[in-house]
Structure formats: structure tokens, C-alpha cells
Length: 88
Length: 392
Image (tube, rainbow over all chains, first blue to last red; front, side, top):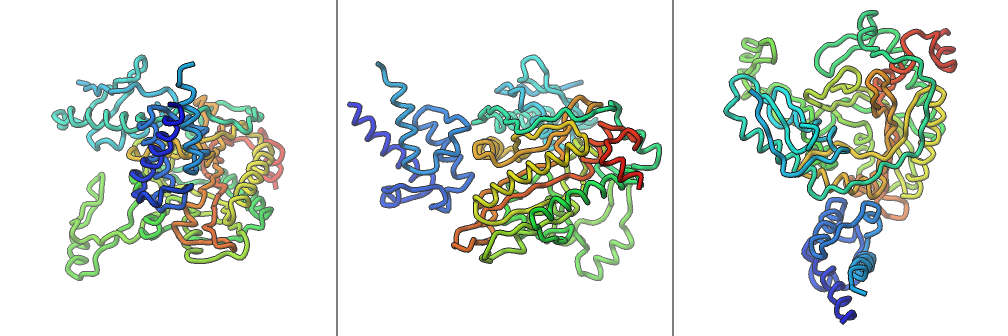
């Protein structure tokens, strides 16, 4: 169950990246980083975070904005929030 | 009779000044306004006579400003790097005294001339900041007051700060247009009255900052090593009814020290500039903080830009005390633009990455005002380091 939830987070993060930065499925497979896509600039970064916040119903604090610079970092952070929300 | 704009969200206390500073741009018919203090979710406003029927439209626009500034707004505590009490010996507003003794003259809203004493201080401060620039081996440059629209477009300035632009026009190259202008143009008491069809398109604007010229100069280049550059220049930022004496000028003077190179270089130079600036501000006996800050972005991108700037620690400001207002005024800033200008102007490091850029910027008229507001106009009461030079 928990493993499914984690898989789901990975895919949902990648889908959000694809939607915000107009990327294909192949392009979101690896560890994309800020600056690698022309759309992932400062405004793109904030747009991505806003979409991720909507997708996972959470709010990233300001200090975390500068840490969410890659797919892997985003997935780990979102997993942390979801883990904190799980009962028990 | 006043009208009211009910806001869907209360304005957070730390956003009130910035919100109110945006409202003059809502409509030319807006005469005055205030945010009702208790709930912070209602603006009372008056319109100029003859515009009363626009009240609902204006209320909707005010509401839109509030909503766009507050949506996705993330509160974050201001980081204070340095705080100094200085040696404040004065509490009066220096403006009327400067005007009375011929050291300040108002030409119009946001446009002031300086007389001998205030100009001496401005040049004294600039000489000291030029010495600071030499500590960074910054190459001196001079730039034009005008800047190409193409350059500002590359800086995405039109999207971020449309409200503060100052466009430059000339008359069209057309004999009939020139003759018609010469015959009919006149000052009508509030504006230059002339036919708009005789005016040119816009190719240039008055420069809103000094450092943009530097990036345009370096466009499409690869730097063998990091560079520091310094320049003093006129800057122009229209601020509508927010323009207030030397506190907020339309036309002001800025000394910048600009850093171009790899990220580590730019960040280390910015840190060093902060440390050195502290020594200078203490020499001048000023009371100030150096704290994290954000730029006054236009409403469309406000929340996102502010959050990004805060999250990445991109801006610190020197906030000097104005004792006569019991408020502070930004007299300088230390900025890191990441690789934004490196990408926008295709400037690369020796290893082929887009350069990072940063700058230390000092508003000279504001420094003069803060100094006089804290120490008064009599050089005998000035801190030793300044009084000594003034006596020479």
C-alpha cells in the first residue's frame, strides 16, 4: 500500500513537470534539473511549485523553494510531506 | 462621498505598504484611498470629481490587486544580517531646511536639484564608494542615461515593472509633423499639448538601473575570468503619487559595483561588499539594518517573484533610519541575479556555463537624505570622518 503511494508520488511529480514545462514522457524519465528546460527558469520554478502544491494539497515553506531544484529532490520532499500525513 | 472596495482576502500586515504603493496605478481617477486598519480587507477611496460613475470598476481593480498580491503569498521572516544604532543626533525632516538655505530645489514631482551642501555630500559619498569599487578591482565605466527597449525586453523588465517605465519619444521625421508641432505645441498647465500622431515609436527608455547596460555590453561573449565593473549613473523609476522628496525620486543617481562570473565568485563578492559597506556606513555614523528584501514587482507576477527572491536569498537592502518618520528607507542593495542575465544576454564563463551576476547598488540622494536626517545640516554635528573632509 505504502509502496503504491510512493510510486504514485513519483509519477504525479513527473506528470506535473511534463504539464508545466511542456515535456514529453521520455524527457521526464530521468533527474531533470532547474535550467535544463528553457521553461524551468525563475518564473517556471514558481509555477511548478504552485502546481505541485495544488496536486498534493501542501504548501512549501519559503526556505524550501531553493532546495527543490531537481526531480529527485522534489520527489523526496513530497514523499516526506505525504509520510508525515500518513496515520500511525 | 467615499466608495469602498471589499477585498476577498485581508492584506497581511507586512504587505500593507507594498499594497498601498500599488494603488496609485489602479486609475488616473483615484484621488485618495486608505486601507481600513482593523480588518485589512476593505479600501475606502475617493474619485476625482466627474468620475463617480467609475466607482465599481475601480473597486474591482483594487480587489484584483489585493487578490493577485495575496494569492500564493508565502510569509517569510526577514533575515537581518547587520543592525547598527549609529550616532543619531537629529530628529527633524531636513527637506524644508535644505530648501530654505538653497540646498534643494523642487522642479516637479520626483525631480529635485541639489545645492552646494547636499551636492557636496552626494559627491563625498560617491568618492568613498568609488574607493570601495577599487578594492574589488572594478573597472570604471560610463553608460548612457537612455537604454534600448531591446535591452529591457531581454531583461523581461516590461513584464516585471511596467508601472515604473519612462518612455522616450521624439517627433517623427516628417516635415509636416514638425511644422504642426512647432505651431501648436504648448504647455497647457499640466502637460505638453500636442498631436500624438506626430510622435515617434518608442526605441529607447530612460534607464531604470545601471547594471543592465553592463550586461548588454557583454552580450554574446565568453569571459576568460570573472569581472567587476563600476559605474555611476542616472536612473529613472516613475512612482506616481508615491514620489516623495528625496525619499522617492523619479530621477536619481546610483553607484553600482557589478560582478560577473561563476556563481561562487559572485556570491563571495556580494558577501565581501556587504562586509565592506558596513565599515563605510559605520564611518558615516548611520543607524541602519541590512536585511533580506524583495523588489516591487508588478501585480501579475508579484507573489511568484517575491517568493523566488526570498527563497533563493537574492536581495539584501540597507535600510537606513529616517528619525523624522520613525521609518527606514532603502539606501542600497546587494543583489544576486543567478544566471538570469547570463542566459538573457548569452554571456558565458570560461567553462561555457551562463555567468551569474550580482551587484552592490547605492542610491546617492537617499544616502544624503538619511545622513542629514540623522545628523542634521550643521557639519559641526557630523561624524568625524565626514566633518573632517567637509572642513577641508
